[in-house]
Length: 556
Image (cartoon, rainbow, N blue to C red):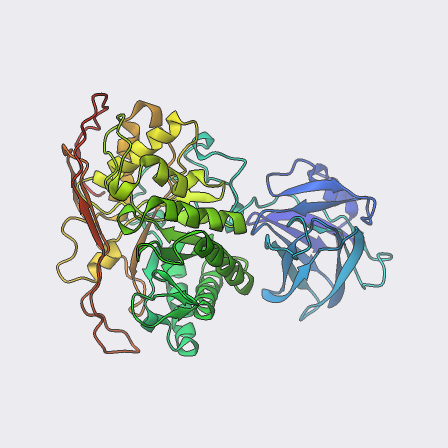
């Protein structure tokens, strides 16, 4: 089977019918690969070498000019699993583990004379495996042997990079125009260099959801509604990260902000429905992140074992979801909600269980708003505790800080945290921020003090970072908004005008807004309001202080 290669939307495409020399011409057999895919020598491989990848979401697309065919790989003791899609339909998960290297093939069948086959790295593995790498060795007419018509070592022109692991690239070293990891079609993280032009495609940001029990029950009825909501967003937003916050962890699931538990199975189904809607209706890239919180103070689920449970849940959801959408984990960690040791242990448990990305979309309650020798925050936390759960716990941990206050207090806190990270030579990875403009629009009267809009919030963080000499130019990821549920479709919230002023204390108030009454197409009952507010006064008394100047900004 002869092939030629071409680059389409950042993925490998192998077209049948061209000569082998066409593969080599202009590509040098693609020896100079980026990040995700690399050449590995192998005595077992049909061609003496194969292309291999480990990054979650890295994908290769093959266009094969026959109805039935075989995909060959070299199984081994350090291999993981990959998803295989034929003409957009996921047909199987291939476990490439073997205690010793050996050739294996899977039989595939298309729906016509020409079939599009996509393989996607899942970063999951057999329990006996030592790693998660996958490879593509050959494509042949049958699984019997690689002989006549067999294409050995099909070579990609380019590749995607890891979606959820960032160990090799510290954020502080990445230019603002690049993502934490340039992961091609599956990487939703991006770093704006300026506020986009209002009304442009980039101006509209992704909106996540606080997921209530009634939004997903009964799940069979809810799934089509969820897919439609995701589809609606994908048509209006070019890319982004959608956090689905299911409330605090409880036995068998999450609270759903009510007394009715959202089960693990319902969380997986909800995530898969979101991924399907985003993949089917938008070009992306998209990421769906399964969120919980450290609320509820000291519980059996807010420590190390809770992090492990959540990590396994994320892995289950990833396996069940469309691989064109990255599925990750997230946690809203707030000092006012629980002790620091417990929060650190939760993140440690997650990191020890999976390499899949973890976002902290929490706050830094009571942390300093100016650079000084003061390191304390609220409830026994320190700056270093917040840094640990936001970046320092592992290469897959990223910060998505809450920037809600119109006073700029939270943006100043995270700028100080970034400066502390630089001083420690362990940078804070500010890969995104989150606002709550959409949730505020669901509350009568809005949020007078905590309703800063997406690009105003981003501008606050950008400005205060650039006001500190050591953090000038630190990349800041694009903003995400959040709302309650999704029954009313995707609505772009109105922008706000923000006045930012300097205060003399480090007091901060973090509030999660809850609409007093919300109706949807499936229910007419009122929702009981519940809000979490932490407000602690903490005056800075340090003698060495860098003051962050006050400014006034208006939304463009």
